[in-house]
Length: 43
Image (cartoon, rainbow, N blue to C red):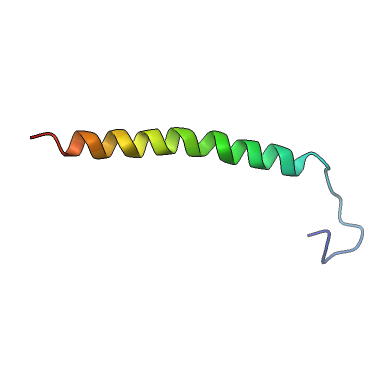
């Protein structure tokens, strides 16, 4: 928003926090999808 609205407040650590949160979210998501897929192929 700060690139389009002059004076919009920014937080310098937002990029680091957002990227870290995204990475931490994708790990359990990947594991959950993998486990769900492997359990659905049980014969």
